[in-house]
Length: 130
Image (tube, rainbow, N blue to C red):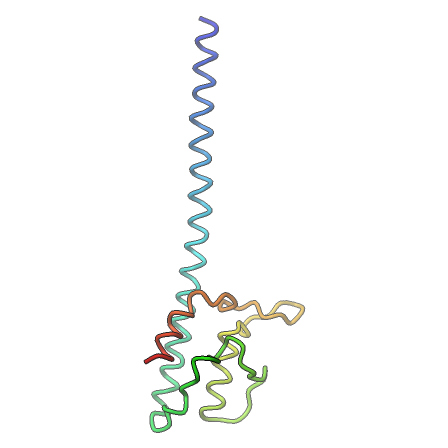
């Protein structure tokens, strides 16, 4: 009987270990999904911001269109501090928001929500292609 109870304990430990590994994997997936959800929410907020800017400047809305080779927020040469008004001011602010300039670390590195452009790339594709 002694050996049988030891085998039962070992089987129980293996089942428990497999269950804990499954929970750890689930936790990693949940964190990844949470980050993606946060980035999608931020992308929609930025899109709504640009929609409001376009609505307020409806007569010159065509000037907001950028080339698909150099879209805003992904390598354009916008200054970090935006001056002026109208379309140039709006696109400068929006580009900096896409680059994560809304939040900075202590070393002045952009750490805002849109550093990873995964959530924004599809929306930007829809905006520049339509």
